[in-house]
Amino acid sequence: MGGRRSEGIHMGEEGGVKVHGWVSEIRDLGRIRFVVIRNWREKIQLTLKRGVTPDDLFELTDDLTQESVIEAVGEEVAEKKAKAVDREIVPARIIVHSIAHPKLPMDPNWKVPAQLPTRLDNRPLDLRRPEVQAVFKIEASLIHGMEEWLRENGFLRVFTPAIIGAASESGAEVFRVQYFDREAYLRQDPQLHRQLTIIGGFERIYDLGVNWRAELSHTPRHLSEFRSIAVELAFIENEQDTMRVEEEMIRAGIKRVVEERSKELELLNVDLEVPKAPFPELRFPKVYDILEEMGKSVEYGEDYDTESERLLWQYVKQEYGADFFFVNRFPFKVKPFYVMKEDETWARSVDLLYKGLELSSGGQREHRYDILVSQIREKGMNPKSLEWFTKFFAYGAPPHGGFAVGIERLTMKMLDLPNIKEAALFPRDPERVLP
RNA sequence: GCCCGGGUGGUGUAGCCCGGUUAGCAUAGGGGCCUGUCGAGCCCCAGACCCGGGUUCAAAUCCCGGCCCGGGCGCCA
Image (cartoon, rainbow, N blue to C red; front, side):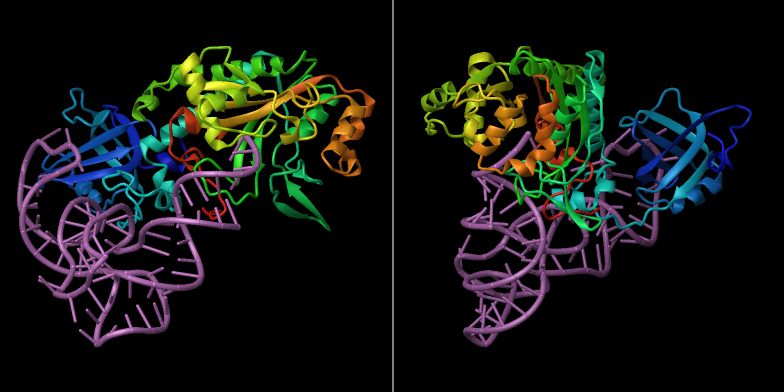
């Protein structure tokens, strides 16, 4: 406290409490007036009575509008009569910080629900809703829990570059940026630099950061800008080691949410449990048989589609009662050059799916220089263009692997949100870069 | 990028198929009444058919184009 903000507040000899917030409702009954304020913890009702409350407080609150920002000092009512609030205060003093324009572009009280585009156009007002704030409180706890687990297990947080001089993988579209007199790109994934950090002798790392994809995706599960928690570890036996880390990290994140966000989960009507480990693992080529049994035909050696992901969830739900599951040993031909092959056809390449949605890709990476370069050729790429990356594998690379979990996707599925944009404060998609 | 669906007061919707009233309702807004409201209540007021073209005596309504939005697919986290 202190400074200009508390000027004009005098607690009085008898003391009192000080509250602040955004005006949620004003109910004027003539001789009595109620002003309900909300902040990110609670709702508080200020009760003003004619003849009891000083007249200047009535005059002050005459001009109040919904969403105005005020502070108040007063006596807390011990036996509050107000039902739908956490506290009731009889104010002795009110400070108005900001009068809101009376015509709001949407209603944070949600008497008339707004559509998602309207909400996102007016996101700062939308964010005032306790249900919306709950999503981000939960997300923060989720990340806290995952980071805590990683640190306790010897992982070091690192920052890898967001601007890269060469498109990091084939496939996903990249955003081009002007980099002095050259062209550069925003990273789609911190993948390759995590590997180079491993080669730099950092044995267990994670990078919590932003990724960009310039895909024209119009779906409820894609963002042009998203965050991932990307883990890489050295001296692994095989891809199973990365899977164990991934499932424990996720369990720790969810455990934290369950422990400290019960109020928010209840508000969102979400019944959350920490998933059991190990997560079920499905493997190619058996995946084709499972899908065949479920009436879905996918050509042997090819990748599956979105519908298959949902069918496989249905399968593991029936067989194991699980929402999280791994799919391992993808065909090498559908995965990037850097994955480690198990044999000629299949790779130690692992996806983690949650409720039928891909949450992460990962697995064991190829660390042997000659094989890595030959895999680049096999992909029809020019080894020269990737030399900036591959050359360091010639100077000592340990066996390693990792994964990158999409944070908004994890949050969305955990809370059964209908759209991933609900899990980003200010989401970016092909149509939206403002606000 | 391809395929579907949709744009009505500030917000959310009815009306559109089957063309013709003052375009209805809720909520927010303005004014009034009310001493315990809590989605407060009651009375009054103001406020809208995405843009352009076409068909027609007449278009929110039918047709074409554009713009915007949502969903499905592909790609991926």
